Length: 441
Image (cartoon, rainbow, N blue to C red):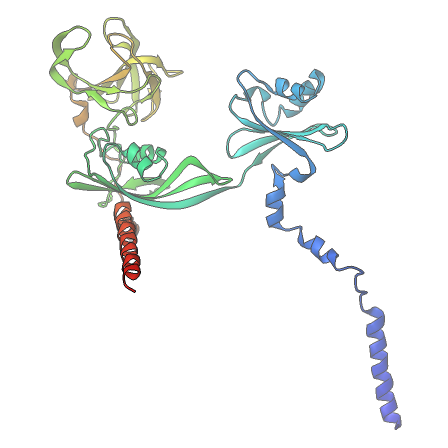
């Protein structure tokens, strides 16, 4: 072998030896890789609850009962009075333990020792937030948030009796009906809906752990009422998000169409109505809304309370609000007043001022609602509603783009009834084809 070849061979051999010497040693067993892979987000979501590894503890879930407190719950699980007091002191800056309410969920995490001890107590403040009481060592208290998600939905349906029942029929949350009534509350009288009125809505609903919450974000809606179609187009102007009609006029007016949500009109404005208690005909210059006792009653517009009192042989508990130099409204037969409402109080539009009742001359729970224009009683169902500022000329091009997009998307929502008919037709056709194939050899 030539000297040159010997040098090349020696060099290559040296490189190979260096690689062998410094190459990392192979692990003795392969399962170690599998152990590392188990530390994944997916597994954490399954095995962790409230940020606590639930597989390491025995967990006892419960519901706070009537008159139960943190003390009664924790003492039941082995903590002494002194320990509960020390925990309550620790939590003062984080959560007031006196605010624990009946009906709320809680969880007790206990160690899996021969003599188990409580390690954590978790109280759910609401579906989205909770407080963790760490009972190990020097007690610690912290707040936590459950992950939330917004799911997009769309709905197209027909009203047969009420919007509330229509939502139930189409497997949507009935609370969505209240949301829509609030949006269209200045333009549509939801106590006067007609059969075959049609609605379309695109919305988001909030969910926690797969459970729906009563939080909605309406991305667009339309309501065909009688011969007219009303649109709700969300648009941000001057930093405020409002709903506008297709012409760019705000749907929010100076007054609501009704002072409470979704209950039937039992008596209308009349100059001669038979009084069920007095047993004679007399004028009824208001509208009666039949509703369960305790139903919240709203101020239909901002204003100042000018009277509050009780009429034993008339309106029972009543409130009178002056909205401006022209309009005054009265709310009667209330079971009670909202906290803090007094003569001179400034109230906001849709602020709760009282609750439906049957005080005074009444045969059952209802709200007698009256409107006065320049001191004269007028039909509340015909009150004018002045809208807020429309879309400005400068913002109109941008609004037009949003409007056209929303209206197009609303028009594309399939009718639930049409889908049902299509499915039924497909099923009938399939059944017919099957029978034909069976009948023909």
